[in-house]
Image (cartoon, rainbow, N blue to C red; front, side, top):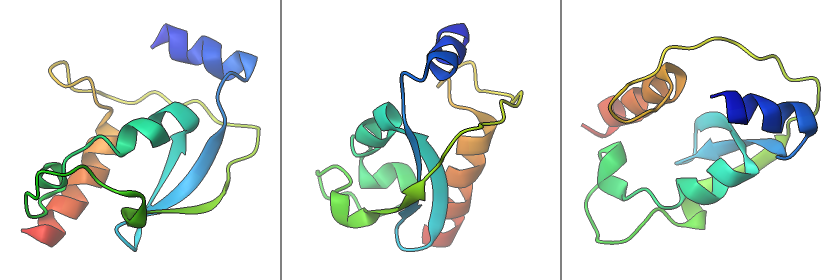
Length: 97
């Protein structure tokens, strides 16, 4: 999204690598990191507890310093998630199936 590219260029967000559910690694901006905890466990194929994903499921690994490489990625028109994130989710879903 163009607004996200502007945020990247101006340094509006910070980025870091996280380990999710003990072994899956992903780089998230500070906004996405906060938003990540809003997902319900069922979104990743985990038992539905009525709770959102807690901080015990997300482990900070390291800051992701500049320079960042901007790449073109496909995305879902329905959920507006990038293919990279959907692939990340699919690997967790298959593990929890």
